[in-house]
Amino acid sequence: MPLPKRRHSKARQAKRRANWKMVVPNVIECPRCHDPRLPHHVCPSCGFYNNRLVIEKKEKAKAE
Image (cartoon, rainbow, N blue to C red; front, side, top):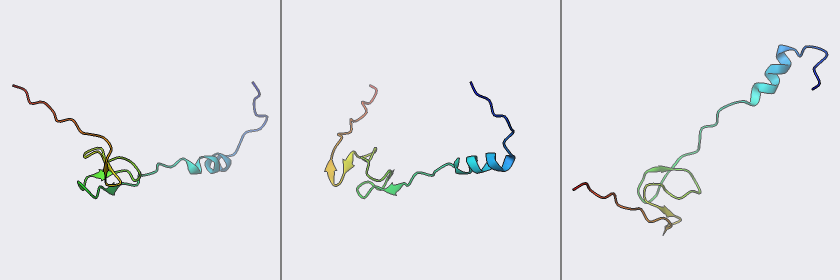
């Protein structure tokens, strides 16, 4: 495996790592249930997308 002949400067290393930033996801409010969801995704709480039911949510069975 090849090795560098000269040391790279700290500025060169910092320029390469300048784009290593965290991206905050764009979260919007669901128009139906007003819970936060990602845009262009099915709402995880109500299961609707584009005013259509896409995923039917199962009700949790109560312990008897």
